[in-house]
Image (tube, rainbow, N blue to C red; front, top):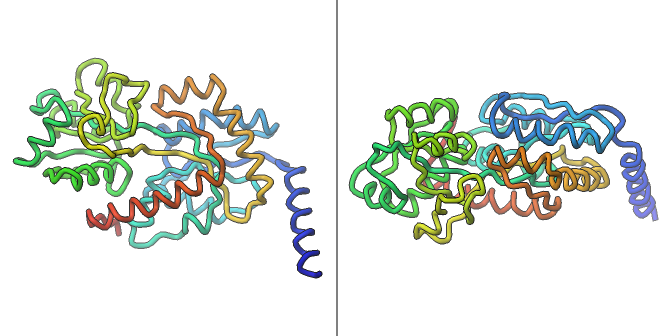
Length: 316
């Protein structure tokens, strides 16, 4: 009887919290510096979400350690629905395998609200690299090494290249940069032949002919560059990798608040305002349920764990 009463009281408290929530502005923690795809993905939805909740949503950048610093801060926040995390697959499902020490557990410390969208990745080459398609690269890289740049060690762009390397037996050598911008500058300048990057970072150089797009690793072509084939179309089926961004809250946030957040975000993601701006970023809006997103996070943790182990990627 006491246990039943306790459950009823907890449910009542959760309902009451949701009815009153939000009572103050919300913090949306972005665990990266301003200006990148993840930061912009957060800023695009902040204002329309705030309008629907009738409270301001303030984007707070807390960069450091590949997203670990800001993510830890969000995990330790009060679980009252007023702190949100802009989650990124590189931080939440790859970093736990790459970093020797990490201060949060993705499944234990966070509750998934919804996937905002999938950001298409892109493999580009300098026009003078001697390869004009993914098939040509695979053939050439089996006989001689090709270096490729990414925005750092252990992120999604690095791991998708390692997966390509594992699948094809090619000699692809990683050149990590402190940011994607310098990697693009160097491949345009011919210092390195290849770069794996977010499509939004490189598409202007593809359009003006300064870079050659070899393929996208997602299951379907990107609306931003519809003429660029997928890896699967180039003979690597199955191959489906994109970089997701989503909203998380601290674990133990009342379920009713999580459901309300999902409901409001689903509406926001269907607005033409968000769709148009996400298209520029190379992001396809999703808005799936908390349960669906949780299952993807769980599956991605397992998948990238295998890739990281095979590639022996570690960050101390």
